[in-house]
Length: 306
Image 1 (tube, rainbow, N blue to C red):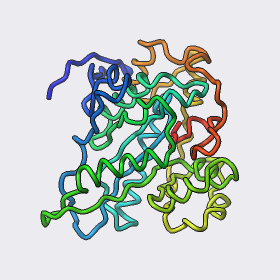
Image 2: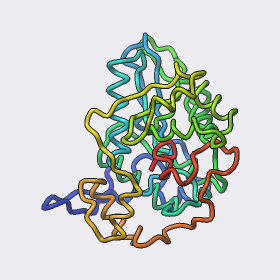
Image 3: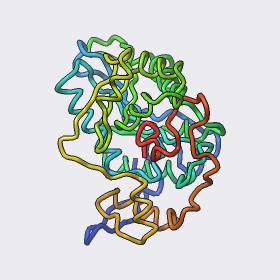
Image 4: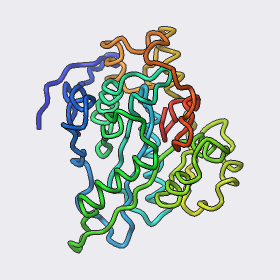
């Protein structure tokens, strides 16, 4: 399907920016309520390449305020790890931006964050999608509930994925996150024990190492689920975060090549992140027992990812 295009400038190169997203409802309407919601599935793999493997769906939850190249790069790092080191086969990948009810400092509206994520995946990826379900919720949703949503849509509604033999196979849903997420999971009082067991026991997590995080110490406190936690090394270190991007923008510094050029254009067009008033900051900590990171852990750097 063709889409009207506008142009963003990256150096001397013109970069097309679609006026409407290509993997779901337009952000302007998708962010209003659930009445127009439909699960984006156009980039899901239709048939597995290797029926002997376990189909895998990756889900990155986060603020994405704004989305950065590291958020996108994490999916590729995990894809390489899965391909060479596991018996999984990836059938899809999703970004799930948090709802406005998270109410953290620096949180742009769900409409804007959805749109930036949609622009980013449309322009940079052939397999990633953005699911607006969590973002359009009126209330804050626990990570466990979000993963249940994906499991329902993929396995109950769609009956899993088709194999080369024409059979249907259940898809394993897993959380994709930065190492700081695992660090918070090992910190007493941040996550409820029930949600920890549900997330790491039923779904598991693919964790990308991050600078400054002692992942070995964190994993030592999560031994009951060690077989469901996969750690991926960053062979080329990337420490960009949404917090740093917002700081650069407030200081009128360049963020070129740190986030996709069309996202930069969108930010400029809508005057986002010009000061600290992008969003309310009435909650600076995780809601008690909700099972997500505290807001102080930068945008939940994927899971609640940056």
